[in-house]
Length: 255
Image (tube, rainbow, N blue to C red):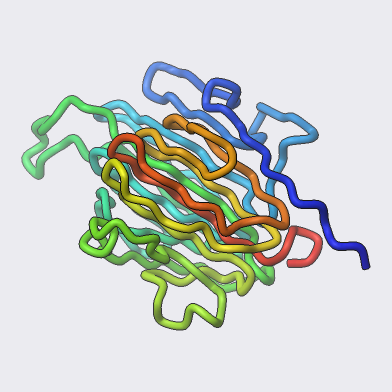
């Protein structure tokens, strides 16, 4: 079998698909909903990388999902989650959340801008990244998991946020139902750097700030890089920055 050709494909923030309505500004790294590009449906096992800002007192009403591993990572503000399995809570920066849709789940996500007395507590949008990967198998029991990992991320290391890879064992903060995929993240101060893992597929997303990618130059907030048969490069922060990195050892046809 011929080995895949090494590719480093840079995707700029301003070229992303975009949904803008009064309460939502959502930038899509891949085709999403009615915004469809036939050559931009996924990379490796990653089908969705949505960069969302939701206005106060607004959000996604109850809606269904099925057969998808959904990881939510908040950058600023806080997000209220409720689902049909009885889970509810507030997601904030440094708290990793995974929802396994499995045989079917209903959930809602809204800007946490209200106090218990019904008064508005702030007027800022919540900014978060939501990422979807395919599970190993369809029809699993729906599930939910969250864990606070802020302290580790502040250390400037590349930390495993979510993983289904056996080699990560208990090192990941939360588990996903795909043995070929893992999500890593880092918060970096100017001059700090981390090395990317090597894998058949990598997806690097600059969630906040500016970085320099070894061999490729500067990347701004919202930029992404799709690596094929590559990895090992160093990422260095030019400003305070936060990155999200999917490591994937299979593509959709091999999952």
